[in-house]
Amino acid sequence: MIECLYCGKLNMDGALICEWCGEPLVDIDPGTTHNTRPERAPLNPYESKVTAFEAPSAVVLQVRNAEDAYFTIEMPDAPVTLGRSDLRTGLFVDIDLTPFDATKLGVSRRHAVLDWDEDGVTIQDLGSANGTLLNGHHLEPDFRRIVCDGDEIMLGKLALRVRFVA
Image 1: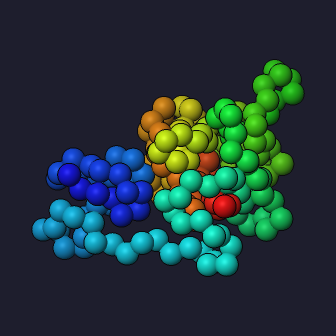
Image 2 (image 1 turned 90 degrees about the vertical axis):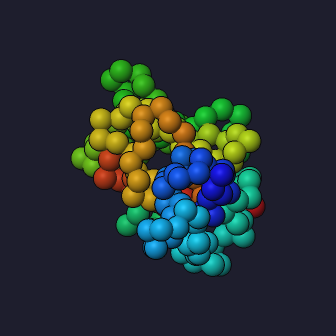
Image 3 (image 1 turned 30 degrees about the vertical axis):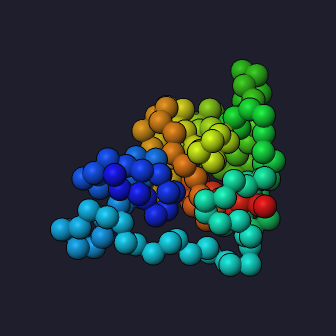
């Protein structure tokens, strides 16, 4: 088994990409089958006191290019849906990204869901029209991936930076 240095989960021998977080499991040398990449550095070491592998008590999602646009999610009892609320149809999401040009940037009404479980914080694409990326890796619909402090989530073309709070 190969342990991913980003999320700590075990993967099958010979795997190139972590099935849990989508990060590469191989070294730059194509002959290796173990992960020797350095741990991901935080964007700003003063922003987070939680390591990438601790369970946070809250998650902050910051909209890229909008310094004062962020959402704080306390550890919820139920999954948190990200997308666009629609008053006409009565569809409401937990995190409404409409004010950030979400329609123009390709965010679906029910785009993705964040959840807390025994693996930590996870994200799952809900079959969105324009897809979800986690650190540049495309997420298959209905398949959960672990989210770490400092990760970037792209909902269509709308970017969110993840921060864990102790």
